[in-house]
Image (cartoon, rainbow, N blue to C red):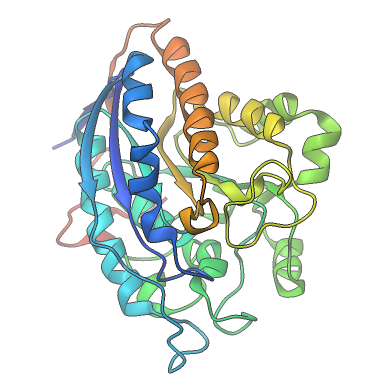
Length: 333
């Protein structure tokens, strides 16, 4: 029988994904605690949200793992995903918006898998400076954080490609990369022939962030099915935010990121938001944490105002809910 998800515009479920196992440096495992300490839940409550905290997954920590130089720390990464997925499922079933505090980009697999428990068709909006399309065969580092998107579309280590069921987790035509700038040659070759949409940081700046974000939603037919919104903080220029593993020149300025994120967050079909790559070890005065809290609070305050302008309604999920005992049985998208 069908499952009805009644989305509650004023409810948010915080979920911590404290992992640095896929990262380029330690520290990401401290991000959920640092953002909570910076007052995220309190700020969201003051904005009008009913905030429930579903706690943290078990920490998965950085290691060099030189025994597996092409795909490091896979067992720890998979353990983290298996912990994260049911928490996202629980949040979505309750009608709340899951707000996942990472962690690394690879955590997106757990977020998407949790959403697809109830939604057979999802789109993915990827705000990130990197395309993350490397695979164990093309990686310069072996760090799985640079391979997240490749695994989402079904390319890479079998442990991750088949983490949820029959790949892909999201079809290439249903993915939009927004604000990318650092693209390795093998990633560039892949994008040339892929139906995956992408908008470079320079194009966002040329168009204006708000207009670019609105155009992206229109072109991805955002009203057609549910959206997972991925927000990697390294999309912000290092002049404005440097508390990430790989800051660099260029990128979108903080104001541009704020504008785009507010446009995306206000869309009624966004059913999960994850924020990744904040590293407290590179933010000793905690100013970066406050910036993150400010960005998220502003975007989600705008979302609440937009969504409460119309009455909420019961939304029927997939025609047949996926069977967690046999995830590939209805996993077509």
